[in-house]
Length: 501
Image (cartoon, rainbow, N blue to C red):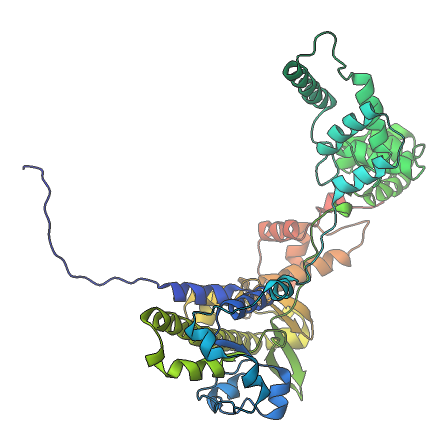
């Protein structure tokens, strides 16, 4: 068969996602703060969007909105009719000729420097300087020679965010000495170079170890804990001796072996280990430059008159509607050029779609949360042990949406309930069958295990098999390896590691 090129026609159907559908999915995924910033940005770029002020609701200027829309939401107003034109004697009409501005392509005459400065002069969150900046501030208060300052800067640059020295002293010396040699070659300097020595590095490391927080600049965990003990004047204690001489046994919780080697009792060894456990293994994070993550719930569940009601916490979201002024101007299409008509059509359609997308987002979130509340009513009444297993597919089948849509609605969303602020993903977990045929949530099983460990006798802790026997007595069938997996997820040590004398 001879190879060649040919052309042919074929008819077929295929599904494509338009850009607006992508934006709608993004809006479903956005948490409350991200949605707030997104809407503020849309207000700046789309003249057909208008902000509903609080005083307008009080004076009744929001009349004419769709009654069905008002029945489902009180946070966004979508007026379907256009308000009557502003009278000529209204001072607001005399301030700005909006029609002239629109016809001139939005070219507003006059200086805009002050206006631009007011538009972009918004308050922003100021982050902390971080560990490296804090260390440099402390070094600036010390009396250091210029040579020591250069070496100190090299040390600070090699300290990671957790406070540990990221490389060895020989590597630090090699890096800074290579830089001195390159600079000398570039400047044509001949003769002996002022290279740094290991004695200078050791002396600078001691200076770094004296800075705050205690333990900064350590090369490993043992040195970090020792620095903190010495800062607390505990370098001559049993805890310090255990760190220096019996660190491996400490990690393995071999208290009897440590007691035999140190000549102390097992109880004294455990007390020293408890003191070590209170130290900070990563002191640098106390000076971290990362911003605090504030959680603002997207939904509120409140119990009123014996019924659990669901509300949207969207009072801080900009309340949008179509601009009545620009709608009135856009009615007379004869005044506009084809370019202006295209601009007006695109912006008007975008504004209408955005308002509809916001309403659809609110409606979807409410439907999902209503189903969760109905399904998990026992959790709200009795606690986490009564949490029922729930999957995204179950919710999607009941509310008639795709599983991916439910996933976007519940992703990074929080709800304020009588039992605290919880992520929506908290209500979704797998289930374990009981002897009476009911299913128990895996999260509820974890809570039972955590309470059993909390209430156990420290001298005779519960093994995984003992926990299995207790749960089976309560009608919960579970394997020992599953108990071990849940215990690891809860960061609970094994029975041997939890045992006390």
